[in-house]
Length: 150
Image (tube, rainbow, N blue to C red; front, top):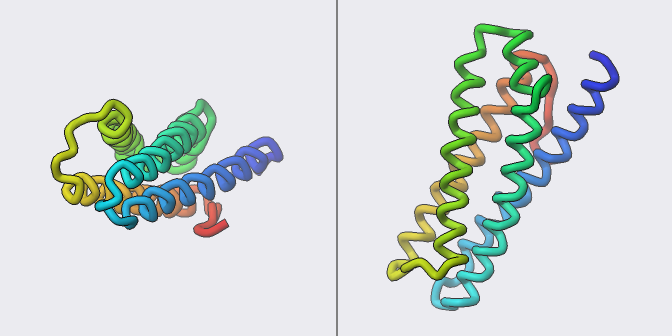
């Protein structure tokens, strides 16, 4: 592995840690009492805003020319469909994060906060599994452990 790709992987590891932290922050915000109303909304909004930023960074880094997705495709073409699935999830999850954030930022109707919390919580679970599948894919293809908790 050349030094520039090794440096790139260090960026990926750091970004994965940031993404993990922002997903955890959303989960923590969701767990606070909904009865706090405006304070709950603001806490969730702030956490989703950070997640939106970190997820956009994740997409930019992994989908960059010569990045992880290109590397997996070139090193192990049989995994192309798995890379495509992750890329499609990027679109889906980015849209969902933005939609939930818009509800909170623009005063959308939230008559049923528990339902909203459950929906965002389900998204958090899907993001965790997305991150796991991405790490597994990189290890399978490039034999590189991106780490789970660093």
